[in-house]
Amino acid sequence: MKIIKVRDYEAMSKKAAVIVSSQINMKNDCVLGLATGDTPLGMYKELIKMYKEEIIDFKEVTTFNLDEYYGISGENEQSYKYYMDKNFFNHINIKPENTHIPNGMAEDIEEEARRYDSLIQGMGDIDLQILGIGRNGHIGFNEPDVKFEACTHLVDLDDETIEANSRFFDDIEDVPKKAISMGIKNIMHADKIILIASGIEKADVIKETIEGSISPNVPASVLQLHPNTIFILDEAAASKLNI
Image 1 (cartoon, rainbow, N blue to C red):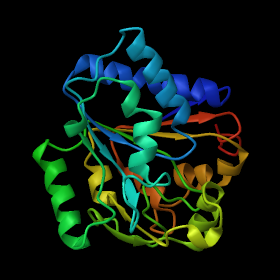
Image 2 (image 1 turned 180 degrees about the horizontal axis):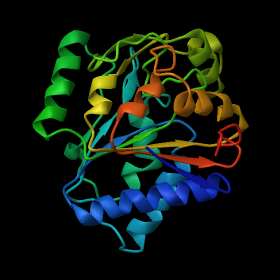
Image 3 (image 1 turned 90 degrees about the vertical axis):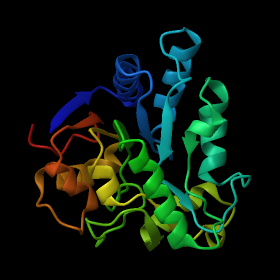
Image 4 (image 1 turned 180 degrees about the vertical axis):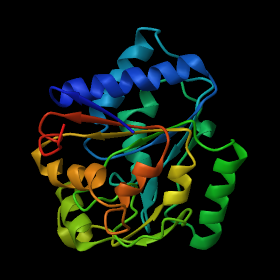
C-alpha cells in the first residue's frame, strides 16, 4: 500500500491522471476499470486535456465501469453510461465497443453478471482500477457486509448511499434502490488499484480503511490485502491518518 497526500482536489485529480496516462503509454491496449461520481470528474477532465494535447491515445484502450443503477436505461441522464459518455468517452478517441458498463435493464440480472465477469476475465482482468469511496466505506456499490469473494452482482443500496446519491435526482424517491456492481473479487484481481478521495467528509472512512481492521463492515479495508494499491488523498481526506 502506498499513500500519496496532495494539497487539494485539483492536485489529487492531476496526480491520478498522470498515473492513468503512464499506464496507457506503458501498455497502449491496457484495460482500465473506471468509477463514477463527483470524485473522478477532475481526473477525467485532466485525461481529456492530455488526449487533446496528444500525450495519450485511447484507441486501443478497453474500459470496464464498476457499476450501474438497476432499472435505469443507458439513455437516462442519471445512468452511469450517460455520465461516462458526457464526462469522458465523448471527448476522447476510445472505441465505443471497447467501453463496458453493466446493463441495468437486463431481464436476467444473474446472467448479466456472469456475462460481465466473463468479459473482464476474457481481457485477462483489469490492469488499473480506479476507485472512489463512499462515506460508509463502499467501493463500487459493494456496501458494508458484502462478501469479499463476490464477483459482479445485484446490490441493495444502503440508506446512506441512497441519501448521498439523492443530490443528483429531483426527489429522493427517484433514486434507484438497487444497482449491479463489480464485486470485491473483480476489484482485487486488478494488477494495480488507485483509490482517490477528497474532502473532510471522507476523513473518518479513510482512517478506517487504511488503519482499521479488515472487515466487511468497511468494504474498502480489504484493499490492505492488495499488493499494489495507491491511495491519492487530499489534505482534508488524509487529515485523521497517523502519517
